[in-house]
Image (tube, rainbow, N blue to C red):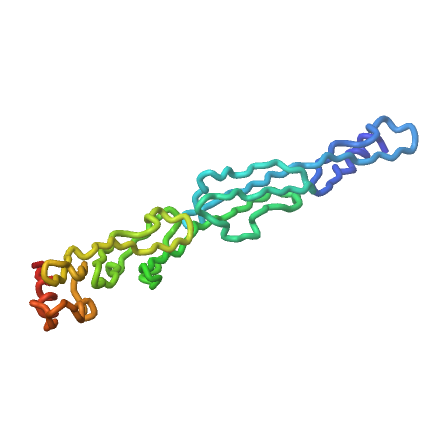
Length: 238
């Protein structure tokens, strides 16, 4: 059998993941018995990794897709990028790794936007409202205006929150802040021309009224205004 006929009768060998490149040694005219060994080179296949927004299906800003030609059988490992305000839908995809098969591979890595819990509380810690907002969204309080009980000596007005409300980047608790207005009224109790007691208050209680006045040679019989009259005057701003 001629050499050319033998070559034509033997198709090129096939090996998964490799390209046949010829024989070793190079085939020459037959002069004796000979053994030829097929030679191969490893193939490379394309690995593609896309980093996508789960909600839109679009590429994540700031995350560059991977396009890599990797030899068959080689190990690969790519760490998924951290993206501010987003988290991996599947934590198992934090690292994409494996052994390159004899074909191209395409992998989609999905991210979802972070959602934070925002809590609004009154000054005493009472919870007023809890909302969930996405990263970068400025939370809004939609409940009733927080209040603080006025006292005898001061009134309180809601003026905002601490800390200041900003676009959400984490779970946050906001606490109501109140401005205190001290009582503008001063009630003075005189004995003759001397001030016996002074009370700054929006109203008086019976405990604020001096109960007994000792004045040499006199018997205390009361004040020239009653308890109720004093509070009426305070209420009217007199």
